[in-house]
Length: 295
Image 1 (spheres, rainbow, N blue to C red):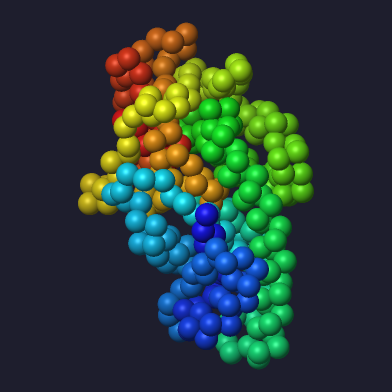
Image 2 (cartoon, rainbow, N blue to C red):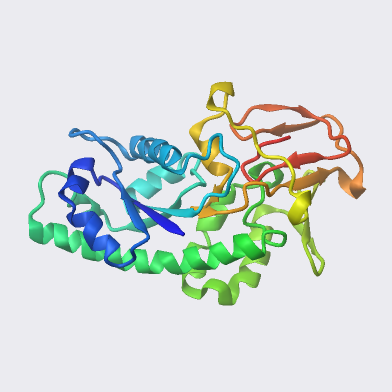
């Protein structure tokens, strides 16, 4: 699996020098470094998120293709910028990792080779930590997708999925798969969702009373989100259909959503993957994907 890395303020001109990419690739040959921006003047972190998202969409080619995404995506941001990102809607197709402000500051202007080497060494340290969580969640999303709450659509929770996840980020990095079951139950509680587990899957009940049943494996995983950017879908809709917290999942995975007690959903107002709310009726149920796309 490829590992895409973006570092706040890392410009395309620095990547052209080759030093950054070569040093990081020496850690892992699967690493692909993406420039956070392509301009010489200052670009704020929100603009950098858009730039990297657009580049990812082109690199991964997931907007029209019916195939899995074989890549993870980590975005390193300064502690100050993370505070800004948290004030808005946190893009869930990235795994955000914070690094000290003074490290990111080295990328503005023309840092000396010695300072640049210090920056790369610092990023290498954080890459090692982040890869532990990437490996843990990759297993969770591939073999435990019918039990994990980390793929739930935001439309079925009472709180912000991303904030709930990053509130437990340090714990997940430290303990990884050893504590994943406990992390699942705590995450469910944070979301205000009720979970009922069986041997094969977990049924999730939203605060509004909707029941989300993870779809079966194999042939029952029918239907693919139709995310044509010309029909109202944004970059985040497309990337969110294959990545959650920077980790890939089965693009066909979805939840069969019914009303309480297994009844059909009738005139239920729900948001879709780009936030448009409208009434939905299931016959017999709604298919809702992790990015909140409704089919």
